[in-house]
Image (cartoon, rainbow, N blue to C red; front, side):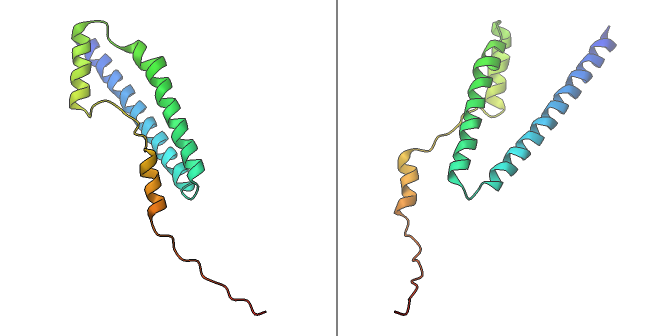
Length: 116
């Protein structure tokens, strides 16, 4: 019986490793997509909106229903959150942070002289 539990744990760990590998690949692909759009703030903003919407869907539709129902399991989850990086959060820039870019001096445009 103990041998069966060990095999089950190994299979579970392998599945988690495969899932993390797939997640790393998705993360790399998203980063490449964002880099390809680095000159377009509108496109980058759209990517951020999609990520925020996905974060909300995962939280509301998958994570919350999966929360533990026993105190012991909830304690273990909270301990894991505390020891492994805290609660996930999507930071939003405030308008005044964006406006700071307006305060930076603009590069002077080269004047073109035309002969009349």
